[in-house]
Image (cartoon, rainbow, N blue to C red; front, side, top):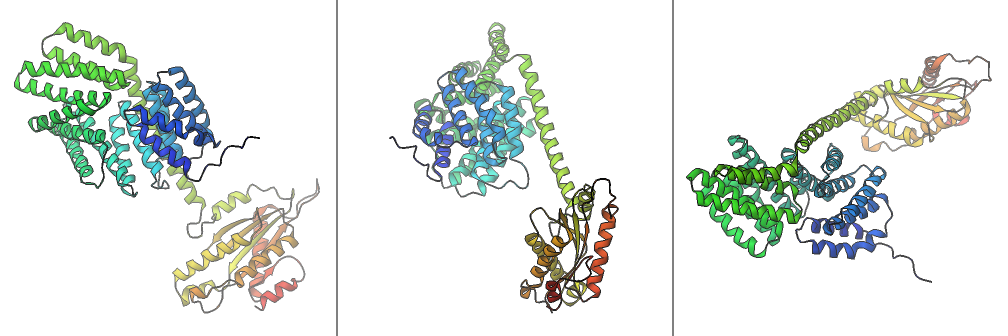
Length: 558
């Protein structure tokens, strides 16, 4: 008999995932594929929806690397189908962001945008705590949004990712997020400069230089590709800040390193940046030879981006080839490249980007409005001191009961001599007493009973289906819990006790009138019994019965 699958060690899945995510972003696909083969049995061993979805997401990236678009589409679809079964968390946000990036790589931009919107919403909010999953979610969202030409939003998520990384211990994560932040700032600076917004471009470029400098100052050892990319980004930022001559030497030096050791995509990225710098110098100095060199670099960059599957930058290179050839007075060549750009892009694609950008912002604002509305509703129905439902909440709940169908008991609980607590100590001590009483009432109630803070030092306990004897027993337990609690840490002059009045609306036979008309009359009855408990000496439970239970009498003398 063959043994079953080995149990996955705690943390093994997460450790495998971090390695795969780091390898996913490398240009060389070899490490990712090797790691995926090694981790396959580990990931397959867990059948939780989130890990099953990850298995499909990673399988989709493998299929894209192999050039099998149909298999990739099937894997992505299977992963998306599982998202509704995943918990609302930063881990799920990371899964969505990774899937969105995979869809962008496959050039499925509409699907990528939908996933990016939902992932972004999960990364937002005051309750989201810093974690590596949150950091990675922002990282992949930033890369996805950049691929969708939503550069402003890409900068936002890069900055948020860096803010999360700054609160976590891994210095390598901080360095990588600073590099990403610098890169997204300079890419947006390039766009602003192209639009003629020079001042804004300079501000963004200055921020990019600051981020790149910050990354260099960290005690980390980036991989060669990251170190080269950092040099490219910093030189590009100098160019966008207007210092063309200062950028030229460093950019030529890093290009020599990239041409020797870099991957296809990084070579294309470096050629694109150097081509832009040379194009700017050619226009400034009227140097046609420099302009020719820029065009040659753009052709190389377009080929590199086509080979590496970066459709967005491939389209950028085509567009700039058309523009630069037009600047050199070559209309036929310019038309050739612009026609190629139009064929790959299309007007509908451009309109779609604008529509999705607007939707992204609107949906994010809608979710924020919904969150604020939920917060206001909670504040409207929750007592901020004790966390219990407040009077408005209690009245809403009581309005849902139909008296007579089943027994319903109400208990009004009042803290004895509470004014003396405030007068003898402080209101801070009084607040502490109310919070502790609230906790004791919650702890010692039955499952299904509901506790509310009615007003001041008065609480209401709703006991659905409880007859009067049952309610009295429950409330005696609550009274004893308060009387026997340890109050010494609050340095009170005497222990805290409560008085309780109970009233019950019994179940009645069909066709018979209820002895109580409405919950307000039931509450008033319980309040009268509370008054009786106070008058008889406090620290007791009073109900409709002719005599108090013996246990209550013992409590009264406590």
